[in-house]
Image (tube, rainbow, N blue to C red; front, side, top):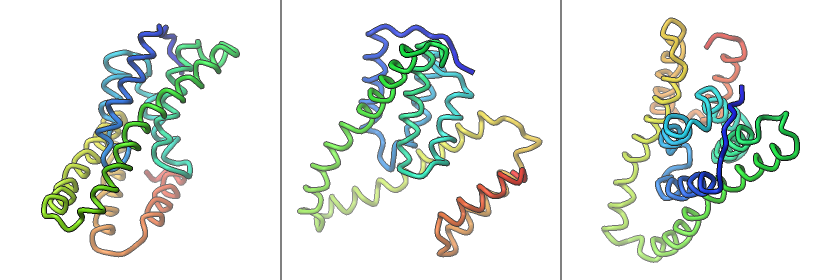
Length: 200
């Protein structure tokens, strides 16, 4: 279901600037910035519905490729809403393409420049205590941001009577990752099969 929203030039600039700022917080991947995207796009601006936001992430995460693809799908949906859905014709498709370009450019440009320069510097100074401490200190931050993203997506589901298999599957996956050397792709595949069978 598409929303009918009107975005001015200043709205598109705010959209782009939001992704620019999130880019520098995307330590560990763009997915950890999903809670703030949700706050801005769904709660504050109303440019996306809850269902569109969750579907954008689910669709992009199920497709092969980098996890940043969900940002492109979110941008597409914002543009689609601004163009009155698929019935808006070429204008709608143009605004959707604009949403994809602005969201991807915003989320990737600052972090790519920062990563390139920082990696070169850290490689040259990898034996320094400060560099090693920074790397160790970032691990809990990334884990906490991933947990907050998972929590946000779970809250959107909000069906407690049906959620216990999901929680059980999550606990089992955490245990397997922690205690075995099973490749994550096998776990993702198993989750996909269980979802396709309707068990979770």
